Amino acid sequence: MTKTGVSIGEAARQSGVKAPTIRYYEQIGLLPAPPRTEGGRRHFDDGELHRLAFIRHARELGFEIEPIRTLLALQDNPNQPCATADAIAKARLADVEQRIRSLQALKVELELMVEGCSHGRIGGCRVIEVLADHGKCAHTQH
Amino acid sequence: MTKTGVSIGEAARQSGVKAPTIRYYEQIGLLPAPPRTEGGRRHFDDGELHRLAFIRHARELGFEIEPIRTLLALQDNPNQPCATADAIAKARLADVEQRIRSLQALKVELELMVEGCSHGRIGGCRVIEVLADHGKCAHTQH
DNA sequence: CTACATCCTCTAGCGACTAGAGGGGCAAGC
DNA sequence: GCTTGCCCCTCTAGTCGCTAGAGGATGTAG
Image (cartoon, rainbow over all chains, first blue to last red; front, side):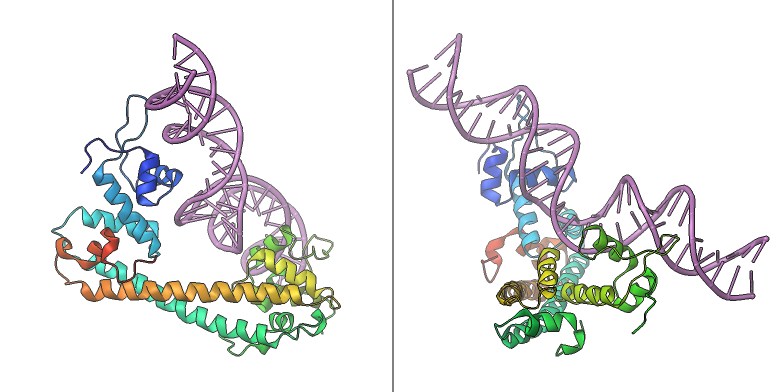
């Protein structure tokens, strides 16, 4: 409910997005250029802070910049069908699921490596051996 | 058991590392510069192919370049204790575990988003709502 | 001898920032 | 008024691990 707007540093504190990153978002057109004070300093009002929070949250959820750009554009037109937003979120979900699967396979390999390490000399170290020879992996699919 | 060595294209085929990437690895000193033919073309022998396979496998397991450099140096000195290799693999394992945890939390959020989408208009789309308001997340820890 | 594939070097670009230089503005205390 | 010190400004360059493309040389099959 502030009317005056805040400086970039305050916007950074409130949104959790660092000031240089905010300027970067403006530069790439993800955030509209905010009004400036006489001295040339940016002044952010609630609308821009809200948009910034949206971007930050989407980034935390792993959305890339281009999908976020689309989502922001959608948010600006509430009467449009939300099929696009749904598709973007589903694509992101599929990506996350795929990553989890492949990381879990890696976890198995790494655990085998670490468990097999005899804490002796490199010559007989399982970590090095496994890296050198893919055939020693439990799953060869990576 | 080839004696002659192979071209960069053949090395790429055998190792699964693309030719420009092999040159890149040479440039950053991860691979030793291989001997050249009269015409200036690289010729890779078994030692280099082995090193390349090691690098590829480590990259597939998500190790970064600098740790791989260390692991390669260790591999070259089989009499050293393998504590360093062990520590690198453990750090990588911890990293993978952390990533899995955070991706699983994201998966929950994304599923809620996608399930909650009414397939209607943006105005009431849960995907957009959740992105705009972190408070609507199941877990606020991200 | 001529195609054609493959190779060479070099530079620039990707995504999403981050770091640093070099300078200007603004509020508080003296 | 003046200084101190923090915040802000723009601009360029760097990060990581490649990838793409230009422009040219070399090797090989027919």
